[in-house]
Length: 197
Image (cartoon, rainbow, N blue to C red; front, side, top):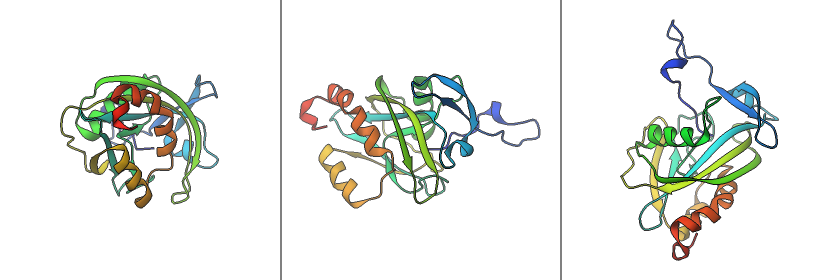
């Protein structure tokens, strides 16, 4: 999943960034502890809380992003609008809205929960493992994204048919189809049947 940047509270008095912590959960999504971010992704992975956002424009096109090349995990691959990890104790909805603003400089409209999905996806390129209990959100975007280049290489708005073509030709994140398929019922409710999702 994408990196979660250090907030001012994460910087120690000597100016060194404190480790980024994730919330560990059990199979039912109940919090059972915390773990340093990289440690949670080392094989075999530790189950932790995450979120994935799917934002659509007024014509039902999905906003996707290509992850920045400098990211240590899954760099340069296409993925959904935004995804990441809540800070320990942070509500997934709050984290989803926060990271969407931080990465893409947009504020989602009508952002709503779209269920959860649990998965285990090893990433052969990095050797890291995604063991995640992922909270899904769908909503609308009404302004043009202005991506943070350290997080996002590029963005695109795509129809369902365009996404299918792109998915055949370009590399996507290991978790992308899992989260998209799990979010489809809420996506169809948001975009309507004519959008083809």
